[in-house]
Image 1 (cartoon, rainbow, N blue to C red):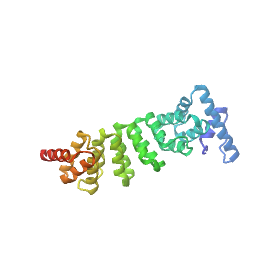
Image 2: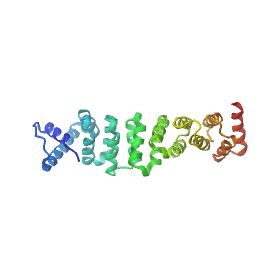
Image 3: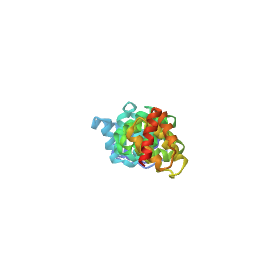
Image 4: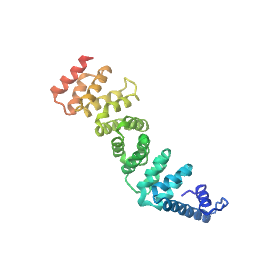
Length: 262
């Protein structure tokens, strides 16, 4: 645990007297204990861990990681309040907050993602990015959780993850569309913007999206029009729509109609 600045400053406040900065291990341990006592005093005075965290972080925003670390170690059973209060107060420290909670194995990454997005929805894409970095083995579940919690930001979440994990772009696309199909066309547009128009990756994304959104007419119409403009063969689109659940007749009539309209 790091207390070089925070522990000493808190020690000063909680005792009303200054102490000289020192590298002595025993004194640093004592300072850390004083920091914990200071936080406990704040909790008692506010009668709430969450309110205490908001108050302390407002006073010492630059020491957010240290304060959250102390709080999680002192009140591990209150991790929901701590994470929520810390994220809402200092969202710029989302990476640190999630890392501290995950390191203590207090909850699954998906639960922490839910807490963080609920606390600060506008940072949903950053929450998803941080959680995927810290828990790569739960990548798909984190994506599902993030886009379902913030469907209006699904395209931005997908775009950020695609940039961070370029080898997982199709995985991000499929997972996002399956979880929030109604915003699928916006997700496709956001991810297609990352590639040159005539790239093989762009064509693959469109074909896969047709399959995933075959049962959603509005999104499918958007995709077919994009496919036609980009010169993707009609048979490929029809076959993809059939894999998505349309009959041969439905796929061909639907696709031919839109191709002809163009």
